[in-house]
Amino acid sequence: MDELSKLDATAQAELVANGDASPLELVDAAIDRIEALNPYINAVIYKDYERAREAAQSADLPSGPFTGVPFLLKDLGANQAGLPYWSGNAALKNMGHIGTGDTELGARFRQAGLITVGKSNLPELGSVPTTQPLSCGPTNNPWDLERSPAGSSGGSGAAVASGMVPLAHANDGGGSTRLPAAWNGLVGLKTTRGTVPNPGNISRLTSELVVSRTVRDTATLFAAVRGSTGSDLFNAEPAPPTPSGPLKVAVINNGGRIEIDADCVAAVDATAAMLADLGHHVEHVDANNLIGPASRVNGELWMAALARRVAGLSEMAGRQVTADDVEPYNWTAAERGEAMLAHEWLSASERQQAWSVSVVNWMADYDLLITPTSGTPPMKTADLWPPAEQPWKISSTYALIGLFTLPFNTTGQPAISLPLHETAAGLPVGVQIAANMGHDQLLLDVSATLETAMPWADRFAPAHASLL
Image (cartoon, rainbow, N blue to C red; front, side, top):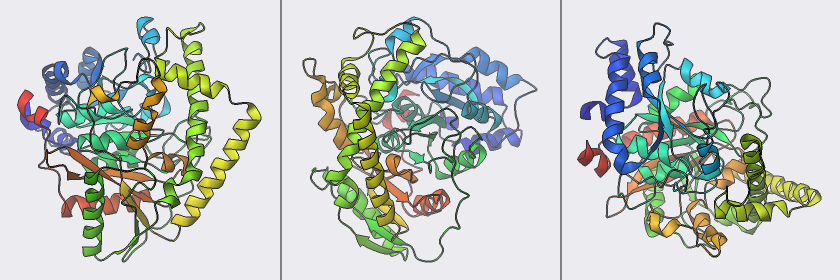
């Protein structure tokens, strides 16, 4: 069990392909690890063991790049038939709400050969960068059980970092893939908008894929599931040619008007120095180009989007939800969002698009941009509960965590978080690399180079080592 937990999804799939292990053996080992670890981590909120074992023994198990590899679905976004869909909300959990069939991406995960063994924890509605919902309780970071695994894909991040499964579903509407990757020592790619299917989604912000331990796992699964459908609102252009030769790299190592942690600065500086050593042209740029005052419009529209999510709870529950059904932070934010009139929303959307155009045009002068993923290393869970009296006061802390990630959800550009640094206490610190529209492959190629130059494969979370 312990040896399998150290293998990435590619290596586990190779065991199956070579006849050295069966899908059932991989699934049973993952189940054993979840049972051993989850009482301490609380990453898995629904266990689908019986159906997973049936799938592992089925003659109809799809042949794909990850045939037989155990997998977790986040309880938001992509889903598969028969699985619950609670979105971290207590009311939906209590009524036993079930999703309706496979979503397009859920079906593509199946076709890649992945076997879903359960669902991972998340904050209610996926709205905040920490995973401590009242419905299922907080998920603990495997690197330090008193700390948060970030969010909103925090359950997936903690599950992979602790060794329960080699990769897990994640989605990203403001950093929800990249932030858990940063705080759990993992790889997390937010793809170019429109490259991964999401029919019915009208948000410019959202992308879906996974968190993993290796670049090759992320790259392989991206290749397996990419490609929008005719019913997708956003449909990416064919990928442009990948730049060759030395790259022009912009670097932001400060938070502008917001002070960020020194370890996050050090992580960026070390990465920039490595890229310079590898022969690329590195240039430090003004943080205001990305996170200046004009970017505040993104927060205004975030509240309006949250109001829509709360309204969506009523539709799923089949009744009007009240403040008793929704966590105080989300209810308060939704009330603010509801106060925005239609013409104000349109005005803010126009300002947001103008800001997005300015960022895309500015970045066109560079091949890559390097920033911290988060403004802080993993924080203690106790410090991330919203105040009971004024829950909105926690927003400044949430803003620090996701300062550098939300901009690329707005622009639609691809961005990846890599575990390239650690604090003196051994906590992971992620570095974000962003590229121009469509250049996901460039990000993956550079990430693979950095994985070799600044390796992290031999770093395992203490919970991974001590609890198995």
